[in-house]
Length: 111
Image (cartoon, rainbow, N blue to C red; front, side, top):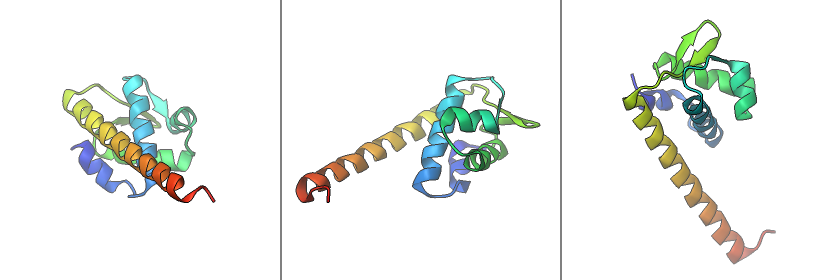
C-alpha cells in the first residue's frame, strides 16, 4: 500500500492534514520506537481521537505497523520518499495560504 492511499482515507480538512503531517514528522524522528495513541497525541499536541483515527488509517495502509496498542514506523526508502513529498507539499501550501492572508491583512486591515 502507500501513503497516498492512506491520505485519501483521512478526512479532507485542514485539521486532519495538519495532524497527519505532525504524526508523520514525529514517527520519522523516532523510527522503530513503539508509541501508543496517548504518546502520539501528547507529543504531537493533538487530541487522542484525531490521533487514533489517523494512526489506524496509517496502519491499515502499512505506513506504520501496529502491535496491540502501539504503533511503529520502520524505515523504508519508498515510504520515506512519499512522506518527504507530502511534507514538502503541505509546507508549500501552508506558506502560500499564510502569504495570501498577510496580503489580505495589508490591503484590508485586521478588523
